[in-house]
Image (cartoon, rainbow, N blue to C red; front, side, top):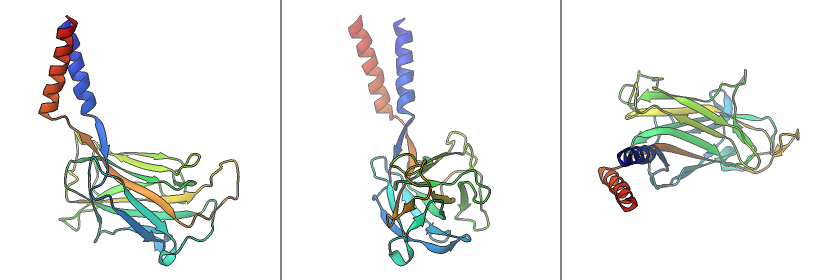
Length: 234
């Protein structure tokens, strides 16, 4: 019976420790970006480019990469009416280790969210380009899932992508991620129409997510701890 309990305990502990998600960015960068008159045909913000993607390294103890979205020429945004929509186009180059299991963008400014299910504006997408072979673009990723969370209360919306790192069709090394979509001002109160945004700027956070794999030392410590507990119980 004790063997069964210890086996289950060890398996559970290792499974839990192997699925802890870490998030953060090396260097804790903070950047500002001006609105452009045309990002794929719509006014909006482009962060990086295919030629100059933003290099991002996962740091399990780091802070997110903070981006400030401003008006033209770095000025404050003009008054924005409820329902106004802007393009969001971000290019990221994964670097360093550990491997990523996902990428997330949060709009910290209340009343803003990513657009989904619209006939006019496309849902958010994530594609990859090969940096070593310029002609290889829009590479499919194994097990890619997307979750869009709407704005709620005093917070903005969220866009999260998850990858299947256990059965990937393509490694992420030497690949440029392009996160593309639209963000819309939906107001602070869903029950009130005609609200306006006068906050001057939008703040967002981006960060990769990675999986913390237990080291042999931590696994041995877990086994020893459970064994000691069972021995003391006897």
